Image (cartoon, rainbow over all chains, first blue to last red):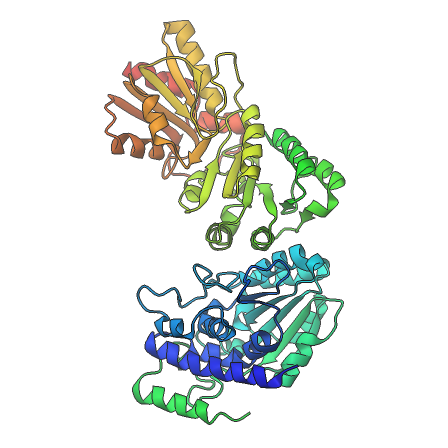
Length: 268
Length: 305
């Protein structure tokens, strides 16, 4: 286990997210910040993927189901060497390969395009079914608000029914969705019990604790795993934290400078 | 058509173990043989068409040749966005199979009438649309779609026309001539072709008119040149479909004729005139109700000839 690598990548994702959403004048910076530590561990220290052989038969599969946080995946892939970090500077701009919602077109390392919520988990099940015998593992990151979608619960039934213990869902549980909190919008609680009752192994953890994320990912299980990563939306930039405005607002001018400053002094 | 489809699928699976059949909990009396012979290639994913289609994408992107199976609008409209985003955008090798095109499930009611599917599926980039007109076509097209690496929609009808000695041999993607003629042409897609050939036969017997009847099994991609070559001496063209006229087969033919500056005197489209059916009746009954039948073809043609 390499905590250092995961931390380095998480830091890179946070700073990239602010830079990319600044330059592209795009939304969803807070949605990337909430899952930066999760992605840091997944891409920094867990997934068996190889930028020199992005389609290797037995590779692990990562799917970002909350596609609006695509900037985070692009940053992780660039950090892993799937493409040049300079490509990140083009995010969201005319003619770029990096769209706001994650897309696989012309981007090595992106396994699946999403953007409409509730699509990533069903596809992950298909990957997990087809690849179980290869020893390939599938990780799907979803949003908590995304769990409003009915396909989540169809999939929760199916993954358990087919005993897909090579599938891990990580829910970036930042407690916010498009307009208000998840609790105010459509209460998910008791969330962990729901997944447990559907037949999943549930790990209810601090989604900014690198060690806890790594431990949950690496825990042996005979069932599909659901990691409820309790996170802070906008984590690391105090004025973005738990503020719905930053689901949409792009950091510009003083706000941009201040956000970078906060992240430079980020304390775990 | 359904039985020809499954018979062919079983044969193809015996040669290719990458083929997987996914059903949305339908296919009683149809899919059992496949399940018994190839249990590891068969998944009943429950009544969850959206998730079934998403799963199909993951399987296909891992090298499987996948078919999703259900009836009416369930494998198409119910999970349209999954078809668009997960299958078509990713260019997945998945064939979406819908049993019960048009009014096949007439008495079951509006929910089970697949009468907008062709237009909606045709509007999706990367999706091929196959509508067999005969049982033989159902078999041959099933082989083709499985062998292709495309996302395809296969619409299987309860009704079907029959092949005769005069029917053109089958060429995938080409129009087939079922009756000879030149000036007067009927073009049909799907099992409703039977109404066209019956009308042509009656017009021949009663009025000694030679009506050319063309069957179209590939709505997309559509071979425009092939159509134009088939219309060299055409004066009246009538299209018939068991589908909404809006965005339907007749609309497609109209587009092609106009784009290619085909000069004709009359262009008649028979289909469902932008409505849902609330009537109770079998396929034949509803065809009569909506005037998409042999009698209407004869009436319309005699009116113009």
